[in-house]
Length: 184
Image (cartoon, rainbow, N blue to C red; front, side, top):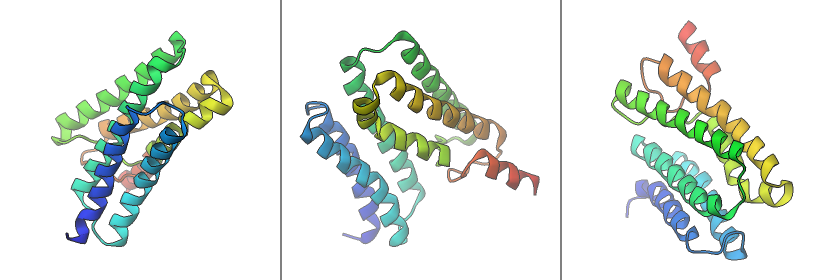
């Protein structure tokens, strides 16, 4: 096997781990073990790709798909399990609508899904990953405010970048870096 496939195999492993989480008792030791391995693999795939010079557009897209699968699984596991208040569901729904709008606009403009790797999206991923721990220690309302607050800013930033840019750059760091580049 060629080394260039290792990062993609790590990413596929994260997707498999996410699916396995559907069949494990939530918040149990086995759940947290697989959950932690999924988080480590999310960091490892990009690191390994850069380290062995195997970063690719396919890898970026696969990573975004794996993130989507992981989030979808977490929603599938936690939405029925917890007592959500209507405002929480509305807020999460609005974020999802903004994200889908951004993807749709990006697909129309660039003929590709425009998952962006901004710092805000990475921050959203980190707090989403911390959901089970935040929930255990801070409760659902505080956890939802933290996650949805960061995710709202991230989604709005991604939508604005997608609307305003002429060319797709999945690795744009933030709206501020895009503005500084567009001024030159």
